[in-house]
Length: 66
Image (cartoon, rainbow, N blue to C red; front, top):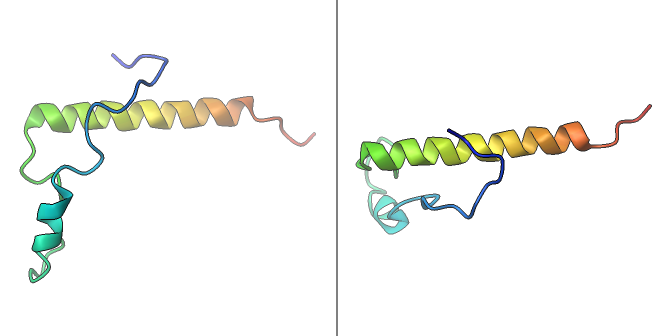
């Protein structure tokens, strides 16, 4: 379940970024989450959803031009 308050990210934004930069010779762009465990992927999805929800809450609170 997603909570209202977003804590500090527990899942890194890009795991092993240095590994992604090593694969420059490939035709296919490197995806840093390719070999991540399912649990990490699910945590990242929850984190992104919480950030998205927070962004929409901020938009709803924005004083609109009337």
